[in-house]
Length: 156
Image 1 (cartoon, rainbow, N blue to C red):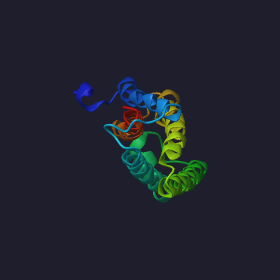
Image 2: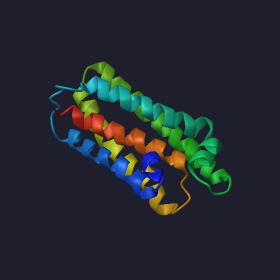
Image 3: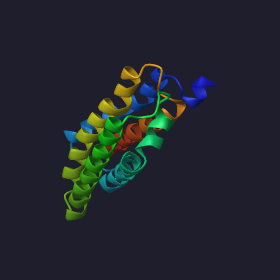
Image 4: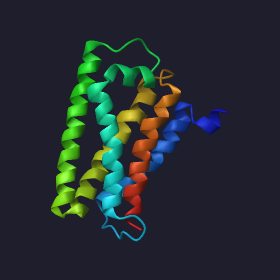
C-alpha cells in the first residue's frame, strides 16, 4: 500500500527529485517539440498559485494537512504569509514576462526558482521534519516535480 500512495519520505523525495532535471531549462535553449514554453509556464504558475494561496490565506490548514506536529506558531503563520506574498509576486513577474513575449527568458527564471523551491521546500521539510510529514505532503512533491519535468520537456 505504501508504494502505491508514496507515503514515505524517501518515496516522496524520489518523486520530486525528477523535477531537478528542469534546471537544465535555465541553461539550454528550448526546442518546444512536445511541450511549448507557454504550456510549461501555465502549469507552473497554476501549481504555484495554489501553493501561494494556501500559504497566504489558510496557513494553519496547510500546516495541519502537511505535518503532524502541534498547531503552527504565530511565527510560522507569519513566515507562511510572507512566503505567499513572495510567491504571488513571482507569479506576477513571470506572467508579465510571459505576456511581454520573452517567454524563453521567463522559462529560465522559472527553472531556477522552481529548482530552488523544490530543494528548500518539500525536500528540506522531509529532512528537517523527520517523520512528521503527512501522506498529503506528496502534493508539493508532485507539483514542483511536475513543474521541473515540464520545464525539461520544453528542451525536447
